Image 1 (cartoon, helix red, strand yellow):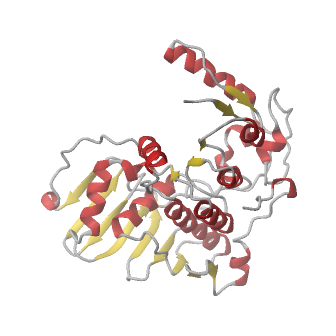
Image 2 (cartoon, helix red, strand yellow):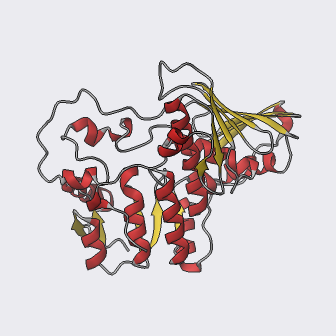
Length: 353
């Protein structure tokens, strides 16, 4: 039962209501809010779906945990590795069910092909090719514009600096490093998630990340990730599957993408014949009732986007970095390690939990 909707730009809520009326031929029975904290305080909620820009998500999710709410959190799960660590702690302390929106973990075709790799169908996998998604760009060259009616721009900026309003920051926020880590954290989360699922790296991070192309495009330079078992993940080309990777092993190759796969040699894996029945949201709702772990739990979402953040840091400094996944620290470069933390405005500090 959908009882409340919140957006800091109220016309978004009006647009959703119009879609609801058109598609369901009924008036929505929800209360509208501009401030999610007010919604949390006033509504008797069981669960929330958090589909905010990246920099807003963790604070909203931790507040939900403290209030005993279960969470569907869109990907990428967080805006920095330390805040992601805090969210993991909050979810586990308050015994919440959190599903991360990497929905291919509920796509039977993807589960099937990833299991084939994980079970040794390629033999030893030595190289994985992933599309080289870029990071975000700095906010530059935007002339201030009037804040639209119905927009709480301060709340949109949230932890980020209070920037002058511009429609590009509002509508195309995925371009800008004030609000996101860029495409590597967005679509890249899906691609890296398939890499980790296929390899069984549910709690394994790369130990070393190396830039492999010049610094003329620092947010898009190529990198290689070195994992503890010797596998190298290469992000050096704009080609390849948008939502997965190409796995190269002793017995051949398999390209895994959203809802499909292709092998070389062709007969390496039989075609998937079962229906993709399960919905990722349905899996979450089932787990809200059963209290079981969902298909994409908080630790997995934290790890995947942490890898993406490390890629961006490596690109920014232009030097190899070494990562201690247990301590969540870059061990060989203080300048790089300092980039793990992103400054928050005090008004939007993470809450105690």
